[in-house]
Length: 151
Image (cartoon, rainbow, N blue to C red):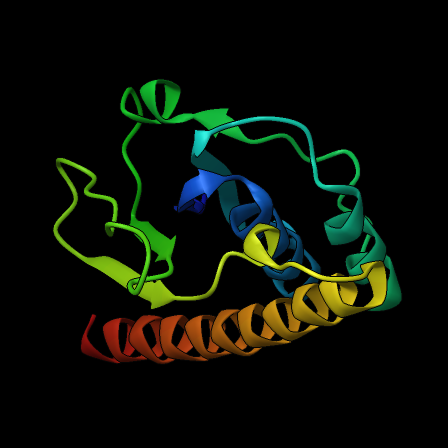
């Protein structure tokens, strides 16, 4: 019996930092259980501080790349998680997806101050994303268990 992997899209406003962090945690927690894609309005290189704080958590995201939103529009996703700071950013809209989940998370790239102050903001965002990814995994497992008990 072939199992179909559910596809998850982390869709970020701004740059790819938050989506790549979320992707790193989901891959770390679930292995290859999901097909994971990060997409952002401004796809680009990984912020060095994001890589640094993820290495502190034991996860290497240096090989991950964010896709452009245009590339993501060509695919179908079982789960779309939109990540933005609702106080400063418009929540992204993704067509053809019924169940978009919105995560209200500050953009760590907007942090100002000395390097250590910026690093603390990145750590806080990392920890917040980790908690949300863990909750997503738990909620998804409950849904799958419910679906299996009905079948």
